[in-house]
Structure formats: C-alpha cells, structure tokens
Amino acid sequence: MSINTREDANKYYQIINGLIDDYIDNHKIRPSKLRTYLKPGGQRFNKFLERNKLKDIKGAEIILKDIIEDREHMESDGVITFESFNLLESTEYKISNLKQCLYKGIEKSDIKMEKSLADYFDVNLGSIDVIDSEKHKFRLEDWQNDDWNVVIYSNEEYEIIKHNMIDHFYDEVEKKEIELVEGLSIKLSKLINNEEFSEKLKSELTESKLNSLIAYTLGEDWSFEKKFRDFFIWIC
Image 1 (cartoon, rainbow, N blue to C red):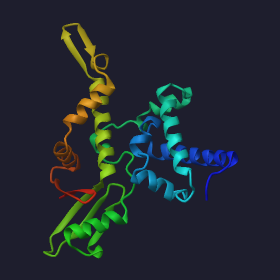
Image 2: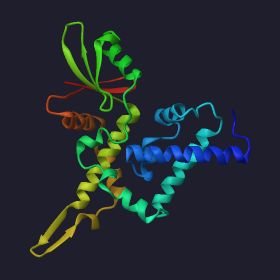
Image 3: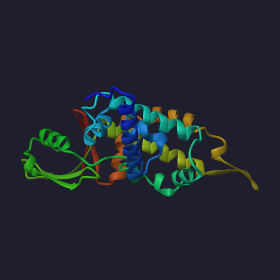
Image 4: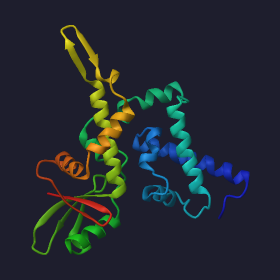
C-alpha cells in the first residue's frame, strides 16, 4: 500500500504522531533525542515501523523521519507547552546514574541476540536462558560445562549507550562549582558548552574505553569479551 493522497498523508501523520508520543512517554526520552534512539534508516527505526505494522506502507518511513525532525525542532526552538517543559525537566527524563545509561531507550533483547550468542559460544539455543530481557542479560552453559553470565548489545544500542553516558557526564559536570578564591565561585555550566563538550567527549570515549566503562558499570566481575558480528559481548 502507498500513501498517495493528502487524506492518506494526514491519516498516517496522526497515527505516527500518536505512536511517537507513546514512544517518548514509555521510554521517558526527550524529543531532541529521538534521532539518537530512532536513527532514520537504522535497525531500530525499521523495527519501529515493523512493530507498528507500517513497514509495508510506502511513504510511512518518510513521515516518521519528518515527525522525528519536527519534534527535535519543537524542543530546540522552545515550541512546547509549559506543562511539557516541566515534564521534560523532571527526573524521569534525566539519567541519574551510570547504570541507567545501559537501559535508557534500550528495547528488550530479541532472538537475533540469542542466535549470535549461540554461534559465538558454539552452543545450542536451549543452553541459553534469558535472565533479564530489558537489561539484555543471559546465562549459558558451554561445552565445558562452564556457566557464563552474558550481556549483549547491538551496534546501534552501543551507540545509544555512548550518547547516554555523554549526556549523563554533561549533566554531572554542569552541577559542579569551582571555588576560585574564598567567597568567589562559579558554576561550570557558565563555562562549558553542551555541544562542544559532547563532541570532545565523543573523541575521548574510544571503543576500548567505552567497553571498559560498560564493564565497570555492569559490576566488578564483568569484563568485555569481544565484538562478534554486529554485537558487543560482556561476560561474568
């Protein structure tokens, strides 16, 4: 099916707008971050269309991309209601600790992850148990009867976690205050620029550093195992 008429376009704009409202509310993410979580053309973007039975609607992907851009501009231009602004500034829409960086905007694990783990560890799917699908945590037993706790993220989810951490670090830095001399101090929020800070941290947060940081966030017994196909794997 194709979107051919103005009536069709208006219909699907309303439908997809409602779906994006639900997505923002369910994941508690800011409209300005939609492109991070639903990168146009990416796997999660396509999965969103498929999950909502829009994949076979020709033109739906263009409408979804337009709505994502519109939401970004509405926030950046300040075209939101006072109630919406208060909601976006609430703690629900912020990342308060490193662990939340691993889950914010991340959807449940899927069968592709289980199959990739089965291939990597050379085990049957029946040897893999889902411990927590929201946290992408599995437990498996290999051919040597060794038990492993495993966490796995796709390439896109890995990038989302990186963005989450950069946002969290900026929020933390913004709160800090430097005392120049006794009785004279200045908040770092007056000295740093979000965009410049983010770009600098992106270059500093290499893949190796991010892998170690995720392992640290998971817990002291966790370590990065390997990048396998389109997935990153940690073990404990």
